[in-house]
Length: 336
Image 1 (cartoon, rainbow, N blue to C red):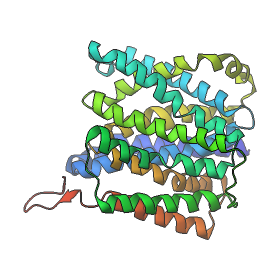
Image 2 (image 1 turned 135 degrees about the vertical axis):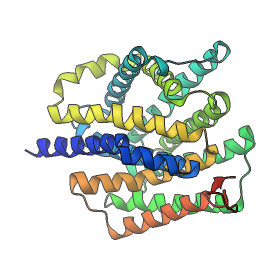
Image 3 (image 1 turned 90 degrees about the horizontal axis):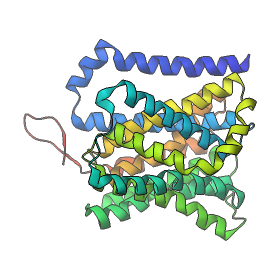
Image 4 (image 1 turned 60 degrees about the vertical axis):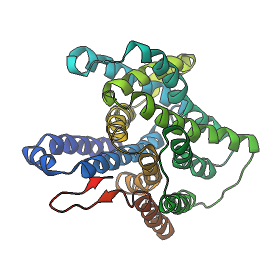
C-alpha cells in the first residue's frame, strides 16, 4: 500500500509538471518572462528535480549499491536519448567534427568522474562530511571560471559563496538528525573532493568549448559516452535488475528521465546564458530541495536548525546573483 502511495505521488508530480509546461497559460506566460526569469526558473527546476534523486536513492539503496544504481540509471538515460535522436530529427547532435574528440574526452572524464568518487568515498568518511565536501563545487567553479573563462568575481559573490556553504553545512549536518562530522580516513576526504572538482571542471570547460551548441543533444552525447565508460560495472548492475519491485522501478525511471534527462537539459540551457560560477552556485540549494522532498514524500520533517540552514543557504545564493541586473528606463531587467 505504501509503495502504491509513493508511486502515485511521483506520477502525479510528473503529470502536473507536464501539464503546466504544455498548457496555453504557460505558453502565454513564457512569452512575457524576461530572459533573466527564464534562466533562473530553469535552474530552480533542476534543483527541485535533483532533490528528488535523494528520495529515489533512499528507496533503491536497500536493493542495489550506489554504483549499480548509477550504472543502470545512465544506461536508461542513454537509451532514452538514442530513441529521442532517432524519432525527433531536430534533436540530433550537430557537433563540429573538430570538437568531437574534445567532447568524448570531456564526457569520459567528467560524467563518471563527478559520480563515482563521491559514491566510493562513503566507504572512508561519514555521509555528512561527504555531502559537505561535494558542495564545494561552486567554489571550484568560481576559481576555474576566473582562470579559464576570465569571468570577473565581485566581493559580494565571494561572500555569498561563503555564506551559502555555511548554510549547506548546517542543512546537511543537522537535517538528518546527526551533526557528526567525523573523518575515518583522510584519503577518503581527498577522494571525495575529486567529485566536486571534476563536476566544476566539466561545467566550466563545457561552457567554453560547447556553450554555443544545443545543450540537449550535446549533453545527451556526453551521457551516452559516460555510460560506455561505466561498462565495467554492467555485470554487477545487471545482477540486481530482477530484485527491484514495481515501486523501485518507478523511482529508477524518475532518476533517468526527471533527475537526469530533463534536469540536465534545463541546467545546461541556463549555463549557456549565465556565467558558470553563478550557475554552479545553485548546487547549494540541492540539500534543501532534498529535505523538502523527504518531507512531502517520506514524511520526514526537517528540524528547526535545518530550516535555518536552508534560509542561510538561499541568502548566500542570492548574494552570488547580486549586481547582475541593470534597470533601464522603459526596459525590463536584463543580465549585465
